[in-house]
Image (cartoon, rainbow, N blue to C red):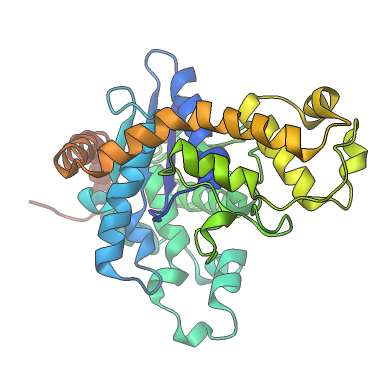
Length: 338
């Protein structure tokens, strides 16, 4: 089993990032059996498909690496790297551009969403983004790719590209690419803003009080939970009682996600109590879980040399794993290299 997954480097990481994606990566790594491999990469090549600040991208890439390691990704057990240090990603994308079809890319819903009405003004990189995603996983002969609802279409495209390439340029008994299977991770918690239960927790929210940052210390976490928006009613004893109460649902959901419990179980314990009792319990649970992560994250962020070494070692291993596939792709296309 070989699992490949990537994440765009974004700064100011928060609780939503941890519960939504990073924690599932750690669980996948820990569940790997001998002989299986997890490759986790920071998608900095994908990041340049949209307008960006180069200095911010560089900083965010290192910050994301620090966050992943602090949260439990072990560079000794998983291959952790950033795309830009493995040129084979971009090379394979170009080779696959001859197989991908404009019609396939035009149907990508994320292209339509991100381009909006100004498609002519968008970068070619944004349009061809799914081909690079295909290269990301096909390069390593991935057997499984973790996908959420928003990425299923892109994985289907990667399979279509792989299948057409194998049909056009390889024999049936010696395909160049493995067709990756989707891996549906445990349902990720949908974490909302602490100031508005109808909006996702986001780094772009101007209010620091709207989110729990991975860099927050215990005092900051407790203060943010204490001041989180709620309503005057006590917690219900059953989940149905949270209907129409988005802030209450959000706090209960956060507690459940952190404790590994269902909302119904949380309400069975706290139902009938007010937020004056529930908030301190939630804050203490968050501090207990996040304090070691926050401390390690802040420590790693200051150690540029250690982060550079982690990414360099991961990239060297990734280049080694990807080289046979890239060589086979060149040969299949009849391209002569020195």
